[in-house]
Image (cartoon, rainbow, N blue to C red; front, side, top):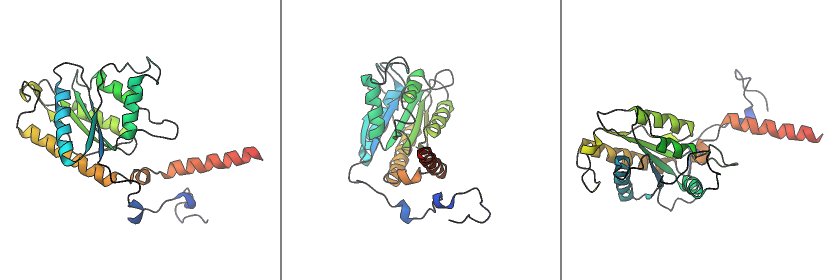
Length: 238
């Protein structure tokens, strides 16, 4: 195939021309959207866990199938083999999910070790499979004092690194001890309304992207790399 005028560095046969038709969903879309939720605290009265369960109820109302991972007894990354039951459970849930929600307290201006440990156990690649790539993501945080966005900003960075589609909206709940009752239910407030907004947006984006993630995450650079490796293998046989 001849070169593209003014684009001599591009391999024309590897350049995909996006169309609306190519964005048609593929696969089984009959099941409810599958959402995995992670929270970042092991405390008995954990506001990040309360907020996660509150968000899960909203997602279930929209029609999602929700699973919440319990980080209790998940070892520190690198301290045990990847065959550890909690590691296997987390990775299987990631593969099962079509969207995720990450919720962490703010500690020393950053996410907690509990939250980071869960994310660190999720590999970018498992053979030919990428457990996080193409999943939608919503981020939330709870604060002990005044409102901050340190945690959600960090979670956004991590979501991008994990090749996830992080939605625009987010939730940050200040002075979380005032926002939940003795049963761990969130009180009515503008903060609660924002959580509804975030879950609604996540649900919509998950509906929009599922069945399309393989196409959306297919990259020219990776097609070029695979083609070059195939050529190298052929040359080695000569």
